[in-house]
Length: 109
Image (tube, rainbow, N blue to C red; front, side):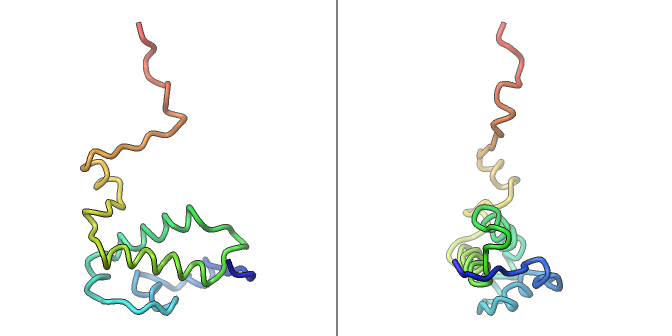
């Protein structure tokens, strides 16, 4: 991890789409891949950031690596396979239940 922090919100404030993020982080990309998967790439990037970044600790290189990883997921796969959005997860029978929701059902008779 790099030693200097990166003000992600400030640096990406002008980014409006996946292409803008990829260009900002100097990641070469195929427009056809981004055109079909732009929302999936951004959601996967968001998921990676939520799982791996720390405010004030994560640097440019780490953000770039996670965006590159998110993009590459869709170069080698597709949205149906990756199931980034919950609607696709539910359609595949994948359900997520929070720990807090366990045991909230009706008590057994």
